[in-house]
Image 1 (cartoon, rainbow, N blue to C red):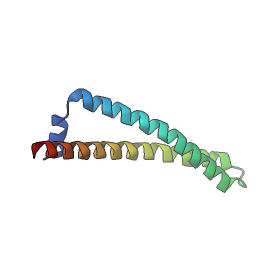
Image 2 (cartoon, helix red, strand yellow):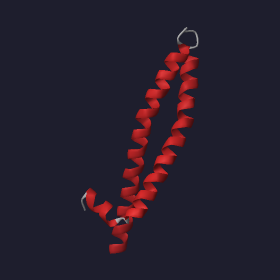
Image 3 (cartoon, rainbow, N blue to C red):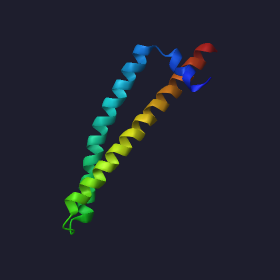
Image 4 (cartoon, helix red, strand yellow):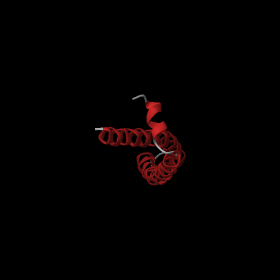
Length: 91
């Protein structure tokens, strides 16, 4: 079954709701994780006069990239689980 076929079988409302939930989870998780990254970065650079700027740059870059990767990861897992459910129903 092609990747696009899986989305066609999932009701549109269910896809939209799951996508919205995944976005909320992504954002809240990134806030927590990015704060952790900021604190760790600051601790590593604390002797540097630009420690706050460096820690902020690292945390922001990390946050944007990892939100994108996490969201894509969630969508792939969701599709693969739904695909398995569909295969079990067809057996």
